[in-house]
Length: 417
Image 1 (cartoon, rainbow, N blue to C red):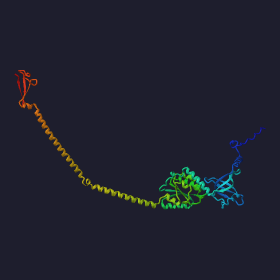
Image 2 (spheres, rainbow, N blue to C red):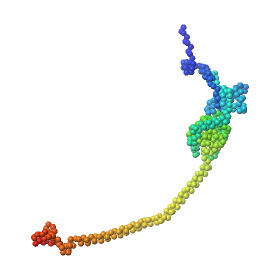
Image 3 (cartoon, rainbow, N blue to C red):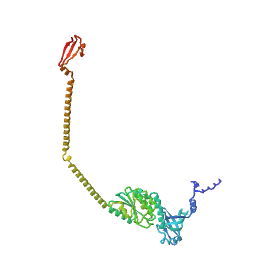
Image 4 (cartoon, rainbow, N blue to C red):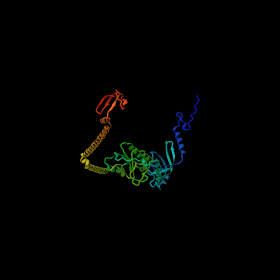
């Protein structure tokens, strides 16, 4: 008979497992149980969302939820632990109570579930909550989430207003009714959510994101009535504040009353002291706007009338000037000036001509006096030889030389002897 195969060695670590050599479920559960059993005791903070207190049982089962996300864990409390809370919580653990528990994780291998076993529970006091809010306020301020430069102006007349509020709440009525009294045509996209308790943060964030994605919504209002510090805690939640800071739509915070100041007021683009004040901020008053338009029309009419009166006065002053009263005066004046200039030019020319005539006469007299003909008229003659040379001496004309004698009124021919 063939020898039997030796038993296959089971992997000792998760990294050694393969498809051919896997861990069975019981081994994985045992490994997880052993690993989780090594975890130390830890202080954990959360909100109580469910309390299962069965009469006669030695333990109480509580569900503890994270304040920022939709995540929860069951917690097992010894009844003696709850008994110590009677001094600070006379009504015991209630839904929404913020607590810190000293617990150690426990893994139940058969069910594959994880829970916390707590040996101490302490409610989170108002003073501690305020200290944590102050720390968060400083953190967000250092990141610039409260910077006025990042805040966006509200539209003057939004067509659609997004409203996040409690279910059938007075805050919804205050915003909607007062806004429609001011501007009846305004439309609302209302998202009713939980505004306190464990689900508030998640529902408000989802509603704001939905309205921010709606292209018709031009401004978002987050509103709720007043309440205690614990009631208003969701509106100072870091996850909610960062979600609001990331919206593209301007957002108005209308949480509580004038004295309430959740951190949402600092992150929002505009803070309204009350939901009624939010209605006043998001839409204008139609009566005030009509009165303003009427006032502007009156001012414009007065301005136009005043301008027309000034122009009429100016035109009358221009028309009263001589140049416009008698336009031909300007032409006649220029005509007289031209006539005077022509007369001066004529006289100047005549004077120049007269002086020129006198000058010419003087020149004529001088020319006559210096002319050879004047000498000839006095009985002198000019004798020239046949070549035209002047005969000044007898030697210049030997006997028999033909001579040309020029007189004042002509010339004669002769010969020398």
